[in-house]
Length: 142
Image (tube, rainbow, N blue to C red):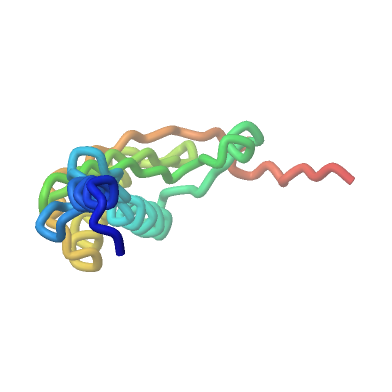
């Protein structure tokens, strides 16, 4: 070791730039978030809605490309509460009002029970499908 002034300066500079253990590595505002819970609740709500008598699971060809179809849920979460916007399909003729209210009630009850989230509201949008859409065989390209 040398007692030269240059050696002391390098050590002091290194001490000034070293992170201290009391400071967080990253500020909370700069970190990203991952919200697995909302995706899980969406998936759960879609499965519950698909099991309701009168609803139809439906994906058009364009929906298959987009990775979407019916039933489809979108969830907003704030704290322990959640709100669900749900799109379902019903075959014509069908009692749309009864199917929508049954779906709303079952999704709210079962999603709350299974997820532990307090589902405050379920908004159901019904898409009515014709018999051709419901009974159409899936076309395949060979």
